[in-house]
Length: 366
Image (cartoon, rainbow, N blue to C red; front, side, top):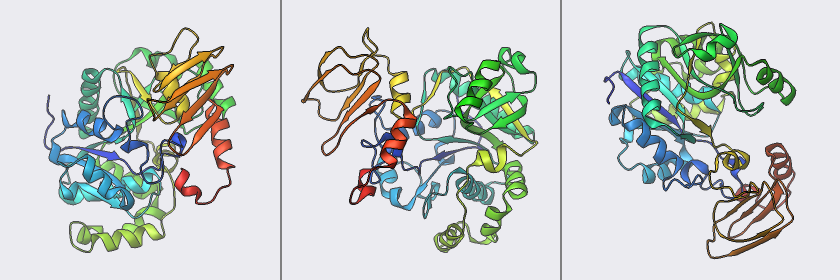
């Protein structure tokens, strides 16, 4: 199953991965780790998934300069010109601006799928069919397509999308226009969306042709795109790195969701039915771990001695260490060579906790 030569894939792999501290650190964040226990890192897994439907020479990875060598190490077959290095992360919108202009310089007829590097896909055959269908539709129309996931709970970590047609949209298996797009609502609003039965989760996987996303980026984010003025004469030349460094020095931090998708009239949704998980934090890893015992305890690695625990997540990098735990409910115990974390499993409590930690060289512990 191979797509045409105008199809491209952009993998966004520059995040810091702080929500998986202390396993994920500044020096090696989660996309370069095998946190999900698949035998491959998130980045490697994502690359191989798309390489089955996108010509390998059309796969672009965007990361930061700090992770350039690490990306080359994990994807040695990636063409050097297909590794775009941002000076530093500015969230997804500037990343997509850079990738879009780069692709337009190479191929004005490019249609691209844009994906994070840290998703878990359960049915890869259906995933590939869905991606190719979305690319085909986007190549022929001026739409910004996002994949929509039927929500499992009222989770405020995701964006929410209401398709035209309301509840009836869940029964369709085809692209539909978006009625409302709300990026990461507060918990109360997320519950309203979930209870209504009319909203999808935003998977953060997009498909669009390069001309359309360029038009919408320049319409809604001129404060970003104007920093790339002159890209046509610079990209693919020896001065590209210097040009990008100047552009990013004045660039705001903003996501594609806030910057474009909430505002555009071109937003469409494709219901995804291939089984999906954004393994973005410890709570998400626990939710999708299949080896829980009868009390809901997930021992992802390490020897265990457990009594009176429930809904517990235990993750150890030392498989020879005995983890003896008693009487914990809805907690996580994360053990590394230099950090032991014991904390409620709730992602909001975890974020509040690590944000308040005061220690020397804190960046080394993130």
